[in-house]
Length: 92
Image (cartoon, rainbow, N blue to C red; front, side, top):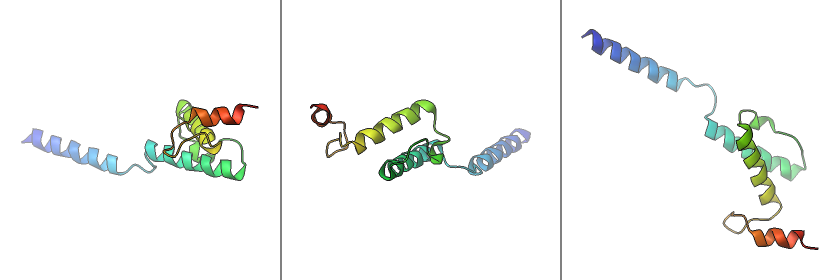
């Protein structure tokens, strides 16, 4: 009986802690960062947006590269990188 109560109490505490996270999940933070980078590029801004504060450095680098490629027009209609479009822009 004591074991059941302990297990139930641990389960309740775990659920309570999981439900009490105050901030967004990491995936939500990454999505917010991506949107902030898009807005920043459109506005001609520079620097790391505040919404990107919780993003890991490697993930942030990928998001910056992705935003740059999209805003340079180097993607196809599906949003995938298009090497030919890049070459057209960089060939004199």
